[in-house]
Image (cartoon, rainbow, N blue to C red; front, side):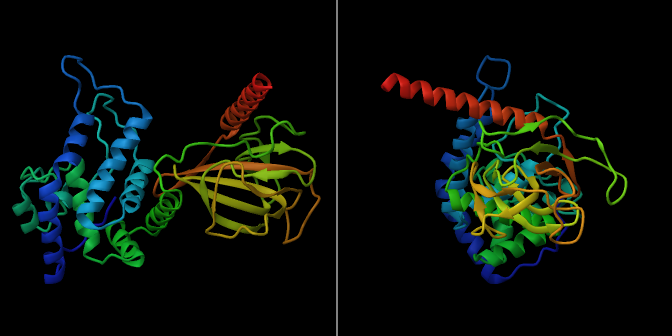
Length: 364
């Protein structure tokens, strides 16, 4: 949840925002119409239209591009904030709530102003008078917290108070959330979107080369005693020492080094705000460093039996890869059973291999 920040402004920021608003007012229609067309139910259907993931991604990208043209803020920064909000959002109780393109939500006291007597105020003038966050980005004379264009333009107005550089953006994000973890995640997501140049970063890989020698089963929740009573938060994949370990996702290397439980381990954060944990390695891909960006199937290290002691401890158990996955919900991060995902990724790779083999045979 964003902090209730003070409404500090200066003349330079007001001039900048006013110019951006004039520009947006002249070209807002396409983005606003895209948002409305996505959200509204088709006439006579009685339910919200079913949209493919591709059409939703395209609609979001169009909205980000429109807002970027109006404000000068790169599209991937809007995408990063939006994705962070979506990744920590709780499931809505009302399944029939109208869909929106943008996942950003702003609490009423922040949107309207903490001292505003009308916490459902949509008047841009009175919201600004009470120091509220809301702005009119769609040009309809309202600052509506359920309007995608208004939400993104309001966020842009806040960010522009701090400047246009990467460091200014980071400061603006921190001032909004007052949460170091949120600022870190959004910076990571922005880097991923900028690096790949697209919104769709779906796609996964099994952490070991399929077709090689390995064995695994669901070991979630089984007891562990070394280092104190605890449960097993992952799946063990037993395979020969030195087997290649691969990234399961598009992501950014968040941790790399020694952990007394996991030995030589590496942690990768993906765009869904999931932390992928690879432990007991014999070594890392030497070109890989913290902050580097990886893709599914990319080599990140090799299987070993490190851990359960001081740096360099080896051989206290058979060689295997411990793979864990954790989800960040903004305040807490919790582990969940990776076994179903591992089976899904393994089966998909086997299907792809068979498909490619059949294509090759057909051509021959």
